[in-house]
Image: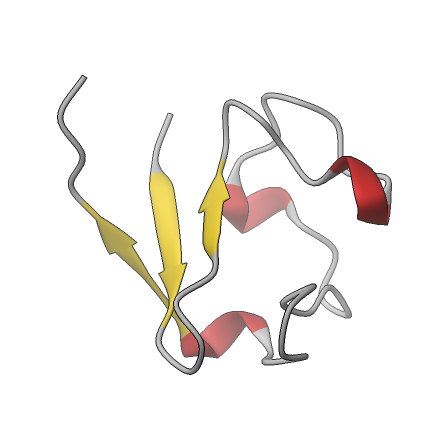
Length: 56
């Protein structure tokens, strides 16, 4: 599972957590998000996200 960061506002999409506010289930890979999914904080499209490294 990866973590993705919005380059516009810094919102973190964690694949382990999903996005319950948008109906995205836990464990949903970023690549599997619907094409019309946008950052819940600023509305940026998926192409504005980048994978980041996190320490467990």
